[in-house]
Length: 531
Image (cartoon, rainbow, N blue to C red):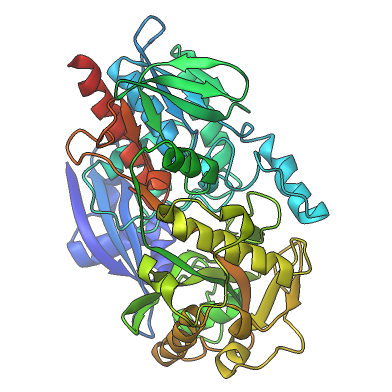
């Protein structure tokens, strides 16, 4: 017999299987001698009160053993002689699109401008050690996309149509821990995700698909309003309908689309900083204890959101026990992001702290960043949000000494509009330099961010502190444009056979939602080809 229970237990009970069985015996009347095994189906932390509890959904196997079905596998068969579909980009949107195409009986040809997930590591290390950014291989470009080396968090608030559980099960099928099916905020970890990504690529190739690295799409071939294929920097041409999953940092793609009259539109983004606290301090605040997380709890997470002058101010991509990383994708840029290894064991915790920005905000007179830089003169206004990102990233690079050293300021000093004369130790390996972020960043960002920090300090005592460091700038929260597509067919509104996909197209916001959108686009291509 199998029975399922929702229980609320102390952390030390949740950490021990026999303790959970004893709890079920005491509270639910089970005979512990007949409980052959239990399986945790869902797990979340309730830290709202001083006493911390763990919420568990438990399946108890009474007088029987569990089947070996911790995840639901997907069957992938050979597609060697099947019609081909071009997938541009090997991030989560592209990889899940390719796998779904195989599942549906189509042959994916994946074209990725960057290197494979292992070879990317050398270029990432070069950013930290030598402050040199390879424009084709960095934290944004390469196999696995931006998520491969920036945490691997799988939590999503997305309500889009799509099977989130399917995405998590496919990850498990390719080597991820089945704990991601259990935890309320699942996380693979930057140290383990590359192996999972390699396994996904190997599945695509083993079934007859192709994956081409260091192959950049330079043009989409369009004839009579329909996509025929793509041209690449290697001189190769690939024919077929195109799933365009290039990620939110492929600015050359946005420029090509705008200059070739492929309809796109400016969309809102969020811009701010990386905020880094000592991890022990966040543990103390969130777990209401001077001892911090203790023996049985993980590094603490937080989530803040408030409204300031009709714009959202919120935490983004929180990395407990993580590090801040250099995420520029070109020269004369400083961009920061966060990541955590699977054990979330660093001495710091960080998050993006960002302010919502809409296109109309760029007309404010208080903006100090000059978006009319020389190299964007005459470009379409639909790219204005991208221009703003570029300008702010360049100014950050200049403030950091024209290197990957990042300008930084203590959190409380920022709210008081005073320069930080020294800075705390940081996880950001290229280094930080004291800078008055409150002065040179646009005032419509800094004023809202400052008020947001003060609001968060009232919500959570101890959070607003000079032990925390603001590191500039966080600009790549989402795509600055949306590639317009039909809601039903997912094709571009005017060009048949072009399927804008994932975060770079403006339809996703993270690994899981991009994966969901990738699968949806693959389904849409199948419908298109069947017709």
